[in-house]
Image (cartoon, rainbow, N blue to C red; front, side, top):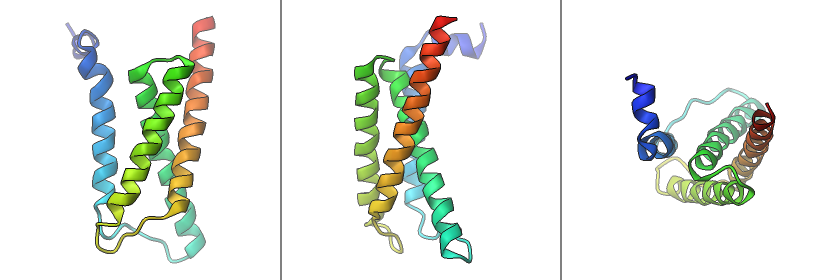
Length: 129
């Protein structure tokens, strides 16, 4: 039996471990006092916004995968992702040198919505085949 088959037989690990691990990665990154920055403000803003959209987009898909592929599951995945995004911004207020930024929260939401839209499209397309 391969590791893949072993994990598939244990839905708690297979579905929920990636969610918890990804949330841990986001928490770890938010706890960093000095993240790399570029020399120009616009490049830094673009890099930061893209990173937020990507990180929370992946989290939203992991939530959707763990919950269900229904419309209700997608809405719950989005709500849980945004709740974690809000908690992430609050967490950053406790880290020296970091601050909460509404723009980051917006990027988190856009990334989550885009990722969930692509996930739903891919699931529909996959089920037709």
